Figure 1 (cartoon, rainbow, N blue to C red):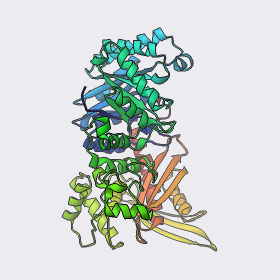
Figure 2 (spheres, rainbow, N blue to C red):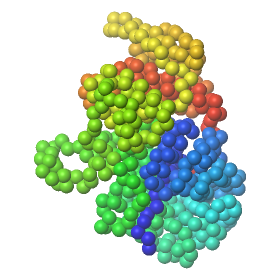
Figure 3 (cartoon, rainbow, N blue to C red):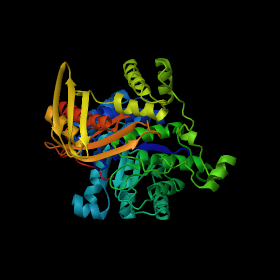
Figure 4 (cartoon, helix red, strand yellow):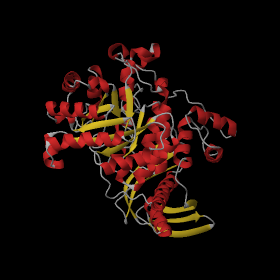
Length: 518
């Protein structure tokens, strides 16, 4: 048996199904490029039939992200499979991932199909997908709660029909590690042609055991783990990619399994996904959390200073977390900034480097030191963004304990400029009312989050907002950074408004998109 475990990343499909997350085509492409750099084996780019936006997103990734398998999800219906192939056919390595539920609960209450009909549909779907590509994955949705005999019958049939990977999901996160490991072992022993396909697992985290269940499955025969960056996904999320990878690496003497993941890209990938989805990583999150390598206890601090391995089982630099950040200042040149951005993992065009350099210089005039986190925030919040239909040109606030907060804002759009004023419950509310007045886009603010990118009084403030246009059920995420938190708040809201305009132009309305429960 091979000692390598394949990493199937579903951040762009199952991860994007996290409540409140809507990635546009540009965001998906940026994440896909980073996943390729990270070294994942398969990128599940989306569910092509779900919407025009999902289709175009998968198609764009298939055309432009090379050197990695690109997968598209499809139910076993021929329409789904045909649509998936339309998007995937441009990839140099394409995989159609087709699924149908196999548990009696799903058959009775959701599909309203007999076991015989499900078996027939599974086989027909795999055969249809096989007409397009040799790489076909079949998933038995809610596999763990399925009758084991029927599940093995389905798996044997789809492998005979041409499936090269069979995925065994714990769709609702019901399993425990011991049970799930034994479950995979039983399937391996009872399906006679199982050696003709890779065994994959896809575990959800409803009981907090997705990673443990995935690792237990690896011990009993699973050769592929489906996971998501930061563990994002439906409900409580998926198995966390970084936790699976670092567990296999750190405990190699136990698992005896390797991955192709470039571990020094893990932190960078985690931050990118967090920023683009708006889902912040909790401080105590394993591997990539802010406190993952922090020590407050005096005993722990003393031990680490004497010998790191006393309280750290991993080196933070291994995951790409640079503890000794370089310090850049206002006298630093464009070349130095470009080199540092490359070291941080950003491969920007000359135009994007120029834009980042201008933003850096503006920040360097306000801050004594500009650190790596500052540079990352500039790039991710002000360079790698959607086209700026509206730009913030001027901002003035009048506010105090004994006066009504008032904002005057001037926006530019092309050669035109627009200036308005409005009052609000506070300075931020006043700004947002002015932006609505100028753009004509009225929204409900669903989330406002502010945090400091670095330490110190001159730290960059990063604001994240989530807004919902009154004319849509879709939500849009916006981010803005500045040493002035009021300005950062304005930039964040304007970034979200620009995404609304961009989305309308792309016709990415996903109101009735079907969602997969693998």
